[in-house]
Picture 1 (cartoon, helix red, strand yellow):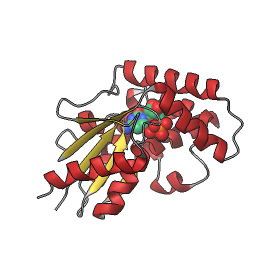
Picture 2 (spheres, protein in one colour):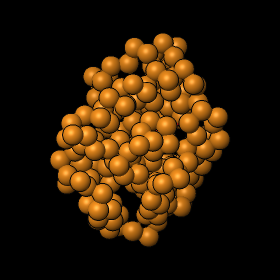
Picture 3 (cartoon, rainbow, N blue to C red):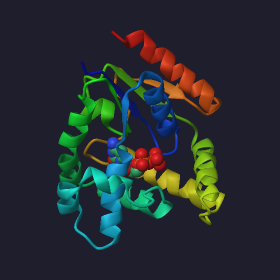
Length: 202
Ligand code: CDP
């Protein structure tokens, strides 16, 4: 039996950590759909064509190298506005969502476009300043030499591009539950997500 949890929201809102925690707690599979766009973005930075790359993308590629760099994040949000790129990635995401045993997908359009009938929809947000600080700490811990100002500007630019695009813009589904993590610890945010999902389990 399938059970889908859709977790959307802007950059560095805590979607990834919450999704991993939820997947571990309930024994669901987890797909970070941002990695799909990041993998295409990386190939485009290497000179390849976006739509053909998305059509040929393999799951193995998502685990190769570090896709979570600032440069690849920007490239990802640029390829993510291209309708042909998005279309090429739909079937893989939907098949993942329907796998037996439950699935958590996190991204920007999971509750609105990819899985409009997901059993649970969460839209995770936090202020741009809080999100930029979290991403700054994450990047610094890996040794990347970013400044706080640069990371905040990057997050704002990417949010604007993601929210304003015409195909599958980032926005909460009408039936999504909003979770603002600005003043929550990761443990508190995860506990709220788990409590919500618990109420929807068959
Ligand atoms: O981790 P973070 O929230 O910073 O980004 P991500 O989830 O890895 O996504 C990187 C970029 O991919 C986003 O800025 C979006 O442009 C794009 N994306 C998308 O368009 N749709 C999704 N379902 C997931 C990501």
